[in-house]
Length: 357
Image (cartoon, rainbow, N blue to C red; front, side, top):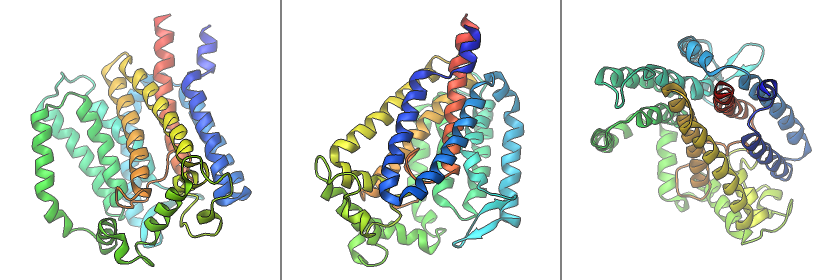
């Protein structure tokens, strides 16, 4: 029985993830053709290998190696600023034979490090521990912001803040921090790059420049609205097939799904996401120590945020920030990072069952 638990990950979570990945390939075929599907399948295979490998690691090892993994992430982020590869005006990649994006690694190692700081702390944590956590979050987010990549910096900072929240941060302190951020928005606006300001302005009024900056969101709304309740049918979406919809295999792939499968297809997709998130939160709730609970909880919540941001972005409810639809959009690093995160969550659940036996 023990060998079976070590070899096979949580069947419910694994099945939901595989179902979502398969559905993503179906939509990707319509959005980009068989070539993209083949490439995505290779990336998924590598991600699943990483997922299965991570599930074999005892959670105590994650805690033990957290400081080293976090240090490696920081060093790689510094290396990006010094010798990184620049693509489309952003210096976000390292060329080590293959191109890697260290900020994606930070999506895992930052919440790991914050959870590590709180592992022996009373709940709610002391001020000294909170300050250390905020310093760690600011360090990683600041390095990523310099690339420049404001969207990823905010998301990674949020993954660390989720750990702080789950550690028992008081509502009074949370309200104070939120108020400070709101009051700081006029000052923060002055530090934004021009393209970042344009994204916010386009979000507020996309019709002001419909053939340029507002094109993406306008075409996305047309695709979503034209899908109706049941959609136009697989590979029958005019906005996608006639190339009116930009980035339809990456950031706007949910618009493709909406046009071709309609409201019903989107509802099924969100039901899958809901089941995955609830399963992860269930595992987090039943984890055997503080470190595992905080880490699994934060990874679950940040996955939820990715879904919400992408859905809000393609429907015009949030600014376009370049967040892919988790496990569905075309891309390698994102899928690998997410599957490694799920591997950590599954490992916590599996090895907890082993200990109980």
